[in-house]
Image (cartoon, rainbow, N blue to C red; front, side, top):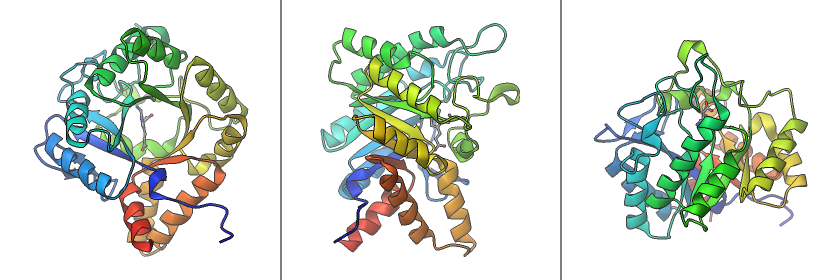
Length: 310
Ligand code: PBG
């Protein structure tokens, strides 16, 4: 009765991986219980998640081929666009379809943008790619585009492209405060990304020593037209989440990322912690800090538990 915070199934967003080459689901070794899906197994999985009451999924694509500009990301026949079309026809409006909008899964160098001759990411040239991807995703049936590349001006570029192509109701969930983090390791296995020449994303993602800077990033994104903002990762950034909640009125999402999930799974598998209890404690703490919604690989497991408790 006096609990201040409640975790509900409708807070959960499931990240899902869909492959252009697989013919059935394959478990990702560093993300126990999480699959790379074929188009068909993805459809079955999303139906299962809908039956659990999970309101939204976010899709990541694994293309058959990669190139310097990540052209698969905006291809109308690209793996995520096909998936969006299938899921829209399977589920109509029963599931909110979010498309992660970035090129790192599609580029042969693994960066989130196009490179200049010296190998650094060209922010403004990348915006043009993002605009094309947004239109392709909206055409295919995305309700929400979620730009995760951390290019300056990406929200405005995407908003303009969506409006100009008639997609005035397609929303933007901005990965606004996204840190260059060591907790993305298992995700890069999941999408088969390694950054060329041992590079990193510190040129465009945030420095974890900085908190106030995140609030500027969030304010920029909202002024550019973000409908919702995200803080990522979650657990090592609960202070950022709580500060974001205090200064914004748009919905705030938190991404409980791959490494955060993998740590709980690994410790639980060793019998060092109670995995289920840790899951609930972590997800509830993310809500307590201010998140309205949580992207988490625990979505199905948490939903099952919460439904059983009901
Ligand atoms: C990049 C992207 C990343 C994640 C989501 N989108 C990886 C990165 O920035 O290197 C990580 C998510 C996770 O670790 O669960 N498009």
